[in-house]
Amino acid sequence: MKPIPLTDLMEAIEENNSAACTNWGFCLSCGSQQDGCEPDARRYKCDDCGNRSVYGSEEILMMGAYTE
Image (cartoon, rainbow, N blue to C red; front, side):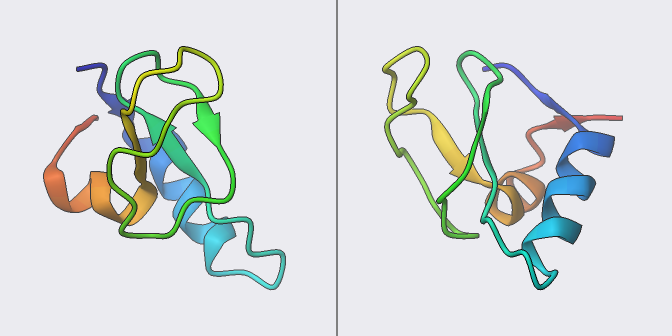
């Protein structure tokens, strides 16, 4: 599992809550950022590596899968 930097995660959550809501998520296998993820998304398929490791930003925060 590739932890996501907390600063990146918080930026994504703030943007998700803005008027430009893009619903960012992250792949915990390769670390890529993807849009179109529900906040509680789990195991979405990654467009970059193909693994089913994309999670919504809020879900990653709750899982504790981030680095400080």
